[in-house]
Amino acid sequence: MKSRNSSIVKCLTWFEAGELLAGFLMSVCSSHRESFEVTCKGGIQVSPRTGLVFFPAFDWAISPTHPEREERLLYTRDQIFEEGLLDLPEVCEYRARVATLKDVARVHFCIPDIRAQATDAHLIAAGGTLVLADALMKKEIRNGFALVRPPGHHAMRVVHGNRGFCNINNEAIMIEYLRKNYGIKKIAIVDTDVHHGDGTQDIYYNDPDVLFISFHQDGRTLYPGSGFPHEAGGPSAFGMTINIPLPPGTTDEGIHYVLDNLVLPIIEDFQPELIINSAGQDNHYTDPLANMRFTAQGYALLNAKLKPDLAVLEGGYAIESALPYVNTAIILAMAGLDYSCVREPDYKKENFVMPSGRMESIKVLVNQLQEIWKNRSELTEHVRKQKGGGEFAEERRSIFYDTDYIREQQKEKIRLCDRCPGYHLIESHGAYPNGSTKSIYAVAIPWQACPSCQEEARSHYRQYVEHPQGFDFIYLQDKPNDAYYQYCVREEKEISYE
Image (cartoon, rainbow, N blue to C red):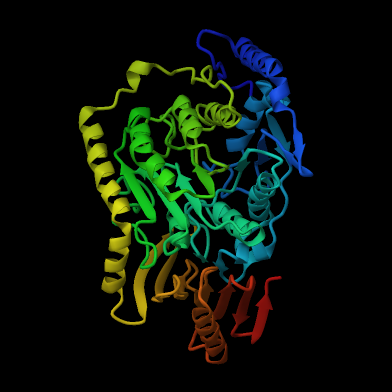
């Protein structure tokens, strides 16, 4: 890290700043060391530590000079080591493990199969989140931060290739793992990446037990061009998706207004069992791919207020000028330590004044979204009637994979049921740059599906296996039975992900 200016505290050299911060933190910890001791209650270890997993994926990159490359985490790792954070009793590090194909199959329909879309690097990044999920549920840690790559929040339920630098969705894989292995039901996801988390939204759009909140730069000015207030949820979960598109140039003031007046009150009302933070850091004022004005201090304060149980790194491409500072500040905030010394070398308060016109537009948006949340039950009934008129609600979409240049046409039908959120029937047709095409028919049965919907959905799968109707692959995602199947029509072969 000798090539970058890593002076955290103004007017101090890199070495002096690091020594001062590490020394200060160690002195604070020493004076309170007794309160940080691991205790044992009923045979279960209870710890106030913050768990970390690092996985920079040295062997995976879209290209050697692509913004999403291993240096994103190497500078952060060096910064954390230099400041002595891993020596603190409040912080502990875990090794990532490899997620199984079944972990991925709980979330995705990968075409032509999971290994075609998920390399070892992807499986280890996802597995890193599962390590922290286990540690949290076993009470080894009080919270955890998975600093892993490749990222995942643009990966949708159906995966033809890489879009938005993402192949599989790390947060969704972690959430479905928690649901299966620990019986977690109600979860809140807060996506703080500058780009709309369209993949996570797609996966949980009709799930009434998952609250998805994304605040991001307005989609009219940035990829992926979505994330508007009217995208509020499916026919069984309208109002459970909260999209907050912010104007370019939004500062700490604007983002914290949204947090204090909308996000935190909604979470308090929802009362989730766990809060997950998709911790994208490309809202930072130095990020080369966006136009926001968030700071390391702003990120740390956001984390201190939100208090996520688990955070997973997403975007952030200012490798030297943002990521080391932001990640250091977030880790300190998660550990309950003082983060006030962590500032960018070029930070000047007078450069971060929020224009009054932009603040007013944010306040109007917050008021609109508050009304949607308050009236979500009535709106859900209205949406079900509007979308229905029959047994199924139907949506058609065109999806572009910007990294792999794949064009997907998708039709999704959701069973409208009075007893459960229904099941999903998905037809997806992918057109690839080499001129080839692949078509799938997929059946997704959610955890909450009633017995009648479960049997109907399994019948659809069996029917299409017997009569494929021109599809190349037939999929079944049977979450109540934790069973996942893929039928290859050409080979007349069924694969079970065990």
